[in-house]
Length: 441
Image 1 (tube, rainbow, N blue to C red):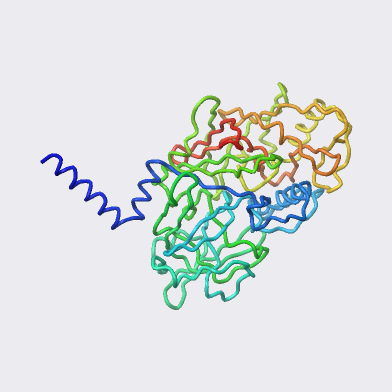
Image 2 (cartoon, rainbow, N blue to C red):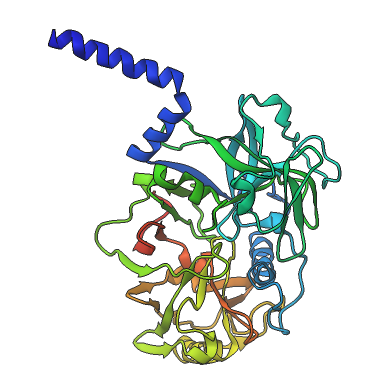
């Protein structure tokens, strides 16, 4: 009898999974976790890859995007007037994710953006869309697609919305460079391709079906996957199914490895073991951005305090962002930091021919690369020495930090995060770092 009951229980479990396959995926993601590939936009795997560019040209373009990404976080602020003005391309985030929308699934490659919330793609019919090389998502072809009404709770999550004549909730979303997407707020199944198992599907995920999109988006891009801290982000929507946890390990831009970076969710995202340090994630305004409290940066044993006059705040004085390459800090703190760096390096200073960096040296001079440690509240993080200085041009190496105007807040960029396993826990509101060779993850 006991054996018969076990068989019945097993059959019942299979029946439940067949009847509710997507939900079973959710349980699986929560219990085991999963990981997805993060493709750098300059990787040969990326649709943005330009084989005609040299490695140094790719780096310089990434540096310029960093400077202009400031407007994404601080729309009214401008980077240092000594910095060149480069074309702002929202669609040129640094990392891409392969995702699918709908049933049957429709694959796209979208920007993975920790600095925004909305998950969206261009949709048919397009009333006014930017040119896109890949086919557009057709919501009519998905059996799981549903528009939200104007009175729905989901519609209230939007900062800006309107109501169509057919009572459909329509979103308006604008980025710092004035690029925009407008369309229907909807729900559909979003599927992420796992690197360590079958694809994982999340039904009834809130998405934006963009019918009117424009600005500086590139034809090779198909939308954005918002990974920020706001209500509409992928992270917040997955919520308890991933226990509020995600992490990533970024391969250095200068690495010769062909391995891609990786983003982890749920139990796969737990950062533990020797060398782990943690700091509070600080709630800010808007709740999209991930704020930390930077107390100082050490050059060797010399600690340079990050003063309140630099940040304008005692808490939440720096944003951590995977989509910004460089680390941007206020001018007065940069001056103190770079001065101490120069004492250690001892090389022959020169000018950056691209006009991006302020502290550069000739590569043939004897350079002593210092050890830099970022002191966050409760967490001392030693930075990867290989990315403290970057070859900005042939024969020229530069300090990979740049100053901003005093009105602009700081951004802890992805170069400084490379070869660190960076784990976000939105339930405990902590951020953890662990030194890791990301080429082997």
